Image (cartoon, rainbow, N blue to C red; front, side, top):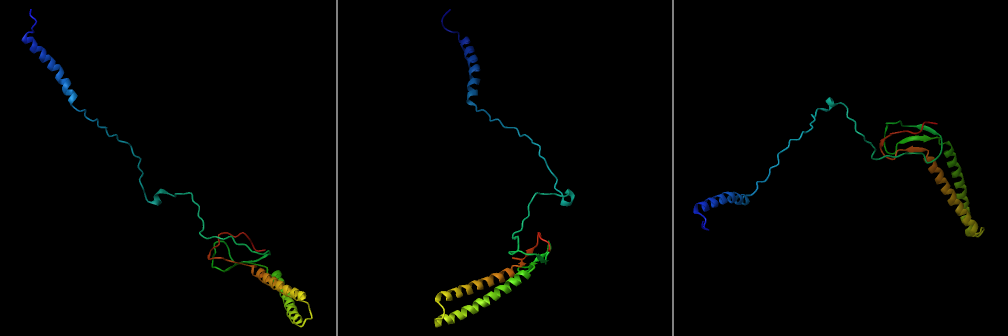
Length: 182
């Protein structure tokens, strides 16, 4: 036989080769289609909203506090004579809430007044006597200091007497009362 391939056979081989390689070549030229994720349905919890009277009582933790508050107390000691308020009462600014027995403080004011009058008169006399040279400047200064001290003692006694009345510092409502009369 000769070394030449028979034309019929050659055609057959070329057709088989074409049949095998053409699909491989065509598959390399095509793009892969993207995969689409399937939608998954998920269950949802639902609640039917109704009117408040149907749902019952709802309670929420909370703390309520006043915008302005003051814890009041007397500035002087004594026995409570009168309480003009009770819990829940509305009060006005400056209203008297409670009163202490003022007897001791009135006596202290009278005593301070007497001491002040005596010191004032002594100081007036000393002023005249120092001008005339009958007392020393040192004695005059002592009389002046005594007069100023007794004036301050009188002011302090009057202030303590005023402190026997407890007054509201602003308008509001009495939340709690910690004291009882006597």
